Amino acid sequence: MSTSFNPYAVRPVAEAPLETRTDFVRKTYTHLAGAIGVFAVIETFLIKAGFGLATLRMLDASSYSWLAVMAGFMIISSIANKMALSGASKTTQYLGLGIYTVAWAVLFLPIISVAMVKVGPAVIGQAAVVTGAMVLGLTAIAFTTKKDFTFLGGALKIGSFIVLGLIVASILMGFSLGIWFCGAMVLFASASILYNTSSIMYHYAPGQHVAASLSLFSSVALLFWYVLRLFMSRD
Picture 1 (cartoon, rainbow, N blue to C red):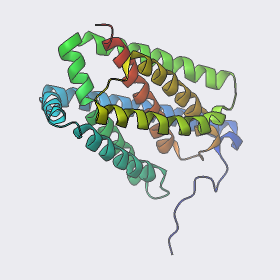
Picture 2: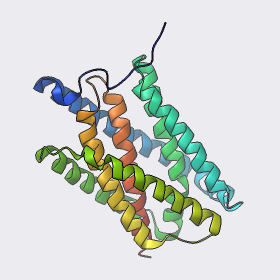
Picture 3: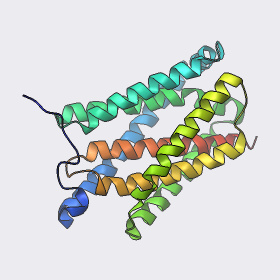
Picture 4: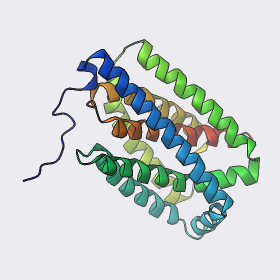
């Protein structure tokens, strides 16, 4: 009889020998960099193929379109995360990371398209550079201070429900959340990066680098989304 894999049933990376910890971190961030690279390639292809503007027209057709997109993204994210955390084959885990990366690329299509048309392509590069610098800084803080930031998990969970509620309300009632919300979300995403950076050491086992890279990718993508929104609000 088969059983589901429990990531907490084995010793976490933090309790493993130094060589194992180093190898795990190297593999996790290599896969994170790979996912970001694949995301950029897919996004570029979709934009050049004209899918960005087509997506905008589809979303403009109904105020409920974004709700459908969000619901679909959440379902796909849940499935991809379970696949990446699975104790099954590496192929299944990589497939989960791949599906998740594609889902984020599709979700980014509208905002990237608007940024290119209304502000210019340069703003995307600027937001990417700032996001990258913030990620490096936050990662350095998490690793050099050796502080366990997993205590942020409860607050982040509550905050995610509040954020989701505000976003749904704004879509249904037709109001803009504004620049202050974007600023707050940058802080939220930054806290999420600190949490996930600690979490991969304390909540993941050696060999789960694919799932760890997926969790980090989600926080980096969220940060990039709202940094880009802030840059777009200047014009």
